[in-house]
Image (cartoon, rainbow, N blue to C red; front, top):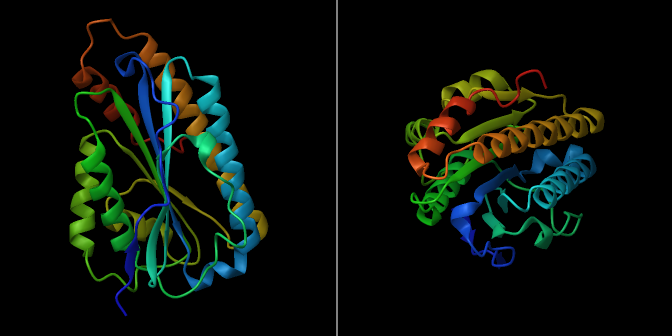
Length: 247
């Protein structure tokens, strides 16, 4: 059965900068597998995501004078691809629970990635200084996409990398390095599908994001007042391939 794309419940409006040109907009994007096999690490996935969410909220508060953070959450299985939060202020995003994260069905990985990138590009303002930190979390290989092919997603990710997006892949229970490399992703973490493995991996993701936010803040604040978005894109590209280095 063809899976549906449900509209978001919330779209971020709070937290907007009064003078956006003086803030760096950071788009935090998490694409989280909700297929049936994720049930074996249900509680640790919920706890891990909630810990990551807490870290993003703390970073957003800490750098509120120079950064505007938003968060988009995508949950996917072969029944539907849901976006409960789209460009929301992190403070408005509620933790996951057993009621809001219920694994089931198969894994339309390519559709989830393709739809998320397409939707985000439609919202980006290329005249704005921004960064995108997009993480894919899955415990299995693609097996249910109907709209986006492997080659299409690979090309989309290559374009994202050319634009300096940080695109990361966290996976378990399959050949994670090969799966990520096949769609041109080099920021990769392979983890054990256990409570400890899952939670440790989410902690690494939180640490990697925190470091990126701090590096971005330092670089952004050092820009000359006349710097253009093209200058910021150059920095993004220099930093996009080493997200998990020494983590």
